[in-house]
Length: 213
Image (cartoon, rainbow, N blue to C red; front, side, top):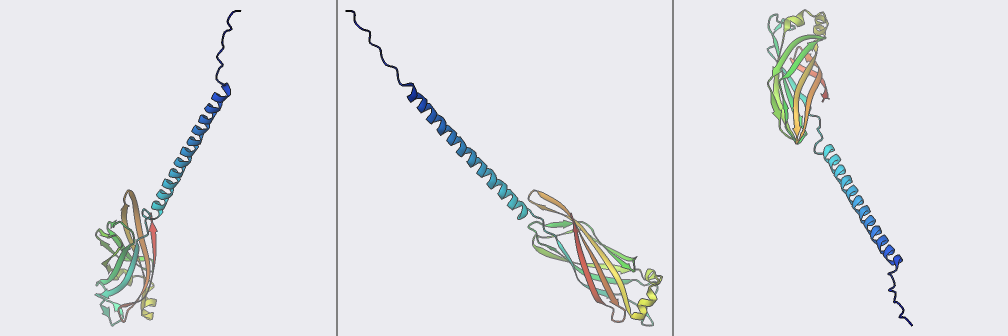
């Protein structure tokens, strides 16, 4: 009898397929973990940026305030009527409060005085800056043109009452830079005041502020 040929059995195919499927599932699982980790990092970064944007980088409104007004060079005729040709001076004590972490640099400031809608005086102050979280004070001197007041038809009624009603408008344009954020800011203040002719003092005063970016 001839010798029988020995046949070597092949490795089970199912075993190799099971091993390949296990490796594939492991790779997919690692991929999902990487995606989840990346997504978590992105969410954290976005949250941090938003938080910094609305805290550190947030520009708060500078606050302008008129602390008081004094009257000088008021010369009266017969103790009641301003002397023609002689200007009246109002000195306003104005403060600018900067609540931010960066300096507020402003250019020339303007203060305009109105009497019953007619411009009767104006003052300009030079540039300056309010340091971070500090309050800067300045004196603004406004010369009132008495001839314009004398020609106003409301003057007689006001002098009978002994009170002059005026409005003051102050404009402070400036700029602020917090790290990489630059903002142009205009602070405006409107004040209504009543001048007592006899005592030469401001009797009542009310101010409102507006900030434009």
